[in-house]
Structures are given as structure tokens and as C-alpha cells.
Image 1 (cartoon, rainbow, N blue to C red):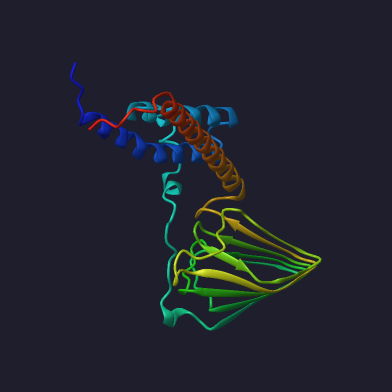
Image 2: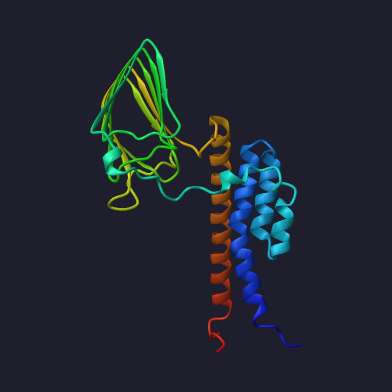
Length: 248
């Protein structure tokens, strides 16, 4: 029987292209609490083994109408501000109080945050940043500062920490993607205080972000294990057929 040599590669490409979208639907469904841990594992395993586009589609057919599809479009670039809109400095002060900066805003080139017995949150998910460095000079004393960034926004910490802590999500890059790409540079003093650097999607809460990262790590581990198995099988085939040559 003749094999349709044009159809198979097309199907393989279709399946390959469909899997990342399906993985995004599944992980976001888990993040939103639509499926539990066991169902997450089952669907990710089935997705890894899926060989047809129909098989991939069946795994997400009951989820696509319930998952927030806007969350699937992870931004790959950071909104840039016009140079004339960026102030040279800005001061944010909270003493025995709490303060939040959220929504669409334009940070200054240097932002000085003073927090004393206070809590401050700077949310950069919808911020318009200048190209290159945007500096955050901290003076946190018996305070808590939370920096929320979107995916792909790099953050470098050069602050002095005394009897305090700086925690960051492992998904936050430390280096910018290009020479003029935005990067937050955190300097200053953290004294008996804490600084958290958290990555979240626009509109995403703390719980959903934690569940999304957990699901993404599981999917990545499963993909690495599958790739390792494939390499092992390929080595076995080469050892079993040492004289075999690729067909022309």
C-alpha cells in the first residue's frame, strides 16, 4: 500500500503547533481551579502522548469555554513610554501606612520608595517603562515592599539587606532580553524589612499565579522526561542497527 508522504508531515506539524496552546488551556484551567491535581497530571500526560490534532482537541474541549483566554496571550514585550513622559525622579512615601501603585502609569527614571512600619506595592504589569534601566531606590525599615512584574520584565537587585529578606519568583529574569529592553534595578537599603518580587499576568491574583507556575513546572518536567525517553530510544535503535543508513 502506498503511503501518503505529504499528509504525515502536515499532521505532525499540526499536532506540534496545537500542543502549546492546549498546554496553556490546561495549566490556566488548573490555575483557575477548574481541574484538580490528578486531572492536571492526567491531561498533561495524555497531551504528551497525543499523536493527532483531534486527540489534542479532545483534551481541552470541555475547558476552552471556561478558561480566561486573555490570560493565554502572555505578553512578549513591555509597553514603552515616550521619553518626554518619563520624569527624572519620583518619591513614594509610606509611614505607618500602606500604599499601592497599580494600573496604567509611567514610572520615573528613578523612583524613591520610603517605607517605615509600612507596606508598599508597586505593580508594573500595566506600566509604561522607559527603555533601559528604571531604578527603584528603597529605604525600607520595618516594612514590606512588593514588586509585581509581568512576564519577561527583568529585575536586578543591588540593594543592601540587613536583618531582612529579598524573595523573587524563579521565573523573573535577571537580565534584559536586549540592549534597550526595560529592566528594573532595585537599590537602596532593606533594614528589618522584606522585599518580594512576584511575576503575574495582568489581572492575575496571587493564588492563580502560584497554581499557574506549579502547573507550568509540572508540564516542563514531563516534557523533559519525554525528551529523555526519546533520546534513550534513539540510542537503542542506533545500537541495534549500526549499519543502517538514512534512506534517500
